[in-house]
Image (cartoon, rainbow, N blue to C red):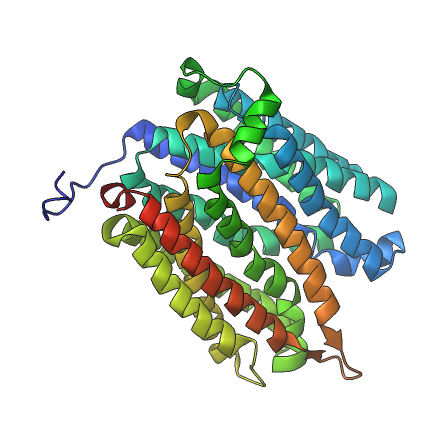
Length: 414
């Protein structure tokens, strides 16, 4: 009411239990993202060790995304029929099993199977995390919640990737997966013992059939824009990130040993800016923050994908600003889209969204691989083409987010 009459909104304060929930959800995201990201930099070790081609390794990487997309759509019909805490523990247990199989994989085909299993379970966890955050926190707090949860990406980049590569060099490429299990198992016990059930949605009327529930969520007209925006928001990361390190080394001309410094500084900056962006989204408005992030992203993608030789300092500054733009889109968009589904469809809505995101990301990654070519000197050609595609999808997603913003009452959108 205060926001309607022009007075500043009352700032909501996190309780001790809410802080615990945010912390454990962020930690879960950290382990999931780390498991997803760690496979790519291990390619230099895995390919010669298992005697496979880069194309085969590419299938090992993309198999996670496609199996995650399949499991997301399959789980959507059942996602709102169980206590979300139990659902989280079930899929996290499957994720730990898949990661254990990766840690034990003696051959390429075993690794491929392990990545499929990991994706089948891990791909659903992010949607359950979003459903829990939506159930437990009012929209006025969700910007801050998403800001903290999304710092998991930066933490995985700062802490996880360097540690994973170090363990792989010290022992074997199996070691990073074993390390993930070592921290994931205690986290699952903490959830089991200390997290309260999340089951308020179960007292409300739902469709009799899970498939009816899936169909009504998937084909609900008011969800269409949100699903379309979710798919487009995944395009940039999947198109640019897989080729980022090769572009830095081969096109910009920085040595390979400079990459950890770039990732470390970028990740540290993102750890600090993520919560700040979440606070800005709650204070100034989700769409307004998304608009700012889109402008920054458009500028930095145009600069980044057309760069020539540059110093380490310049590359770090541009990379940091690029990620500020990316996070200024990711955090407020997740918070704003979370206001769209009703409580009885939040689980299925987020599961379908995660599935579509993984699928579109897999397609974007494959498309990028077909667009990019490497010349005889090792330089990547047509990298700027990816930039133009990403900028186009960013503009389209801005239009979609505007209409989503209009669909959420202004007093709730802030």
